[in-house]
Length: 387
Ligand SMILES: Nc1ncnc2c1ncn2[C@@H]1O[C@H](COP(=O)(O)OP(=O)(O)OP(=O)(O)O)[C@@H](O)[C@H]1O
Ligand SMILES: [Mg+2]
Image (cartoon, rainbow, N blue to C red):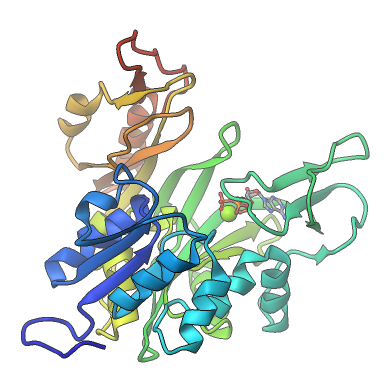
């Protein structure tokens, strides 16, 4: 660790593996606190790159680049799970501070190992097995899945399974999908955020809408927060860790999966909570006191996705109209190319009344499409559902 200086946190330099929007939002939260950021990412066009003071250009598998970033930083974290975990474990064994711990990442990256670890800790999870137990079942690739891409429902023998090492879960009948952002600091301090509802766009297989507070009973709220916290403690998570849950038709709360980083379900905390998930993550990994997680207003977040058929340089024709509405906060990630269903930004709507926020968010979803402009060519139209 470098020498402390006055008016600066003890850990001044934060290394982030991955230069996407999550890294960008970590930096946006950390700059007011005086942190300096270094990033490992392939391209200067990546969302977090313009905000960093220090850059390592490379792939997230590249051990030499990872080593260079880790030695620049006082503490290193990550905004994506698909990274070279072995390189991180090696650097940690030589004394580098990497949080959440690389061992946790290794467990989480194998979804079957993750489920086993949760089950061993007594956390309620859907039934699962290594062999197909019969139909219906949910097949999950053990590694590499994201945005639902490694998940397949098998209703009967006619459904084609995904290729690759997999395991199977019971098909859970759920009333709602919920998420809880948990923070746990290097000092052992913990905090949970209010439970949110996650709504999926079945076609894009992407979380389309996040709603806070979740429309659930106070008892379910308390149980969900408790289960999420116990799960993070059992896995020894340090930092901000997102816990995705099912509230089942029979009223059970089950953990679906864990993400060892700030999460799409926590974006609304930027405006809706006293302390955003991104600031909280930085506080947690640098040993600062955690901030209040109190919800200051009802909030609905919608992802701004590339429209069907949209390619090239992104354009957001609805931007003026969006920003003209009360309570609307736009976060544009600065990606240089749009693709269908690519996450280009998000919008958080705040209101005193959740129904008002939901209605405004619905309107934004129907009006907001990201179009693409091919260099020297015609603009693409964006799609019918071009969020
Ligand atoms: N056992 C299950 N029963 C019913 N539905 C499920 C089950 N597991 C997953 N799903 C559905 O599939 C979605 C994606 O699954 P999961 O979260 O495990 O995958 P993922 O690829 O990591 O997704 P993401 O990156 O979007 O979080 C879940 O949000 C849920 O809607
Ligand atoms: Mg998920």
